[in-house]
Image 1: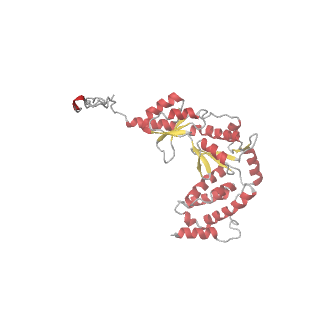
Image 2: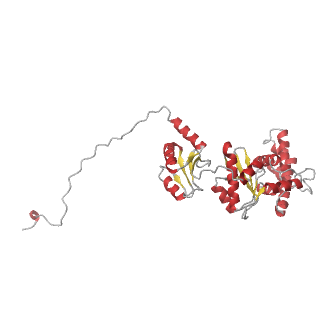
Image 3: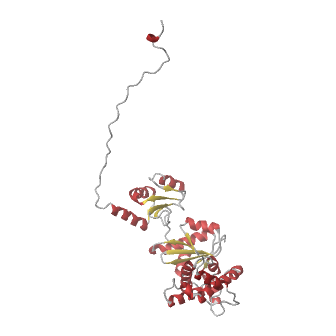
Length: 337
């Protein structure tokens, strides 16, 4: 049964208006002509809801200041692709995505002035020797590397998955430790360029690091902690980009209880001692998160008494005397005279 809020939202989104944004100053959209045309309509509906239906966001925005910040974010988002990608998100997801994107736009991306914006866009773009993929925007947010593809491309999506990125609309993201975040951002930018994708980086220092190839590459063999709901609190052995994946897979298959795939494996946290041995024998780097999980598992055994258990063999049942093999002949005493 539809709720009052749902009915009001539908009314606001479908309400006919010649210029729903006429009294709201918004940044000019960027993208292809087709993208801009589509995104303009989507943005108009979203802005109308945000302006006329603030009551709908009351449960999500705690104060008037937050509501105003949300409006500013919507007004500042320029990328037509972003509006298209987020068109199906519900209120809560859209609000969070808009605040995230709006923050980047206001503090990282170009100003509203078109001439200045295009100049900055051109300066921020790094092009490969041969273009074979869509433009990718690489940026850093708190604890994450973020990659936005201007257009859908299956091959590029596959590359991002292999590099540990997961889809979190409207971007591909990967959690990273703060001390290596710039290295991971530069590394994925370089891999995208090698793949044939032009890469846009607004952060000047990060862009320069990418141009100079000045980053510490990540170990292709790693012990991580799973971030998936299915395999949470388990060790995740990763060798997606290793040159000898078959060798890694065979080694992982020797681990007790391991769930092994072509590009990785999952191992129960309680097997941490085996993981330590495995990592040392096969050249796997243990990430800080995995090391923390190891310490947690060690802590569970703190103060315990180690016992060298030797199960005793139970008394066996005496063997029965063997029967004489049958030879098919009748005993002489049983023959008729």
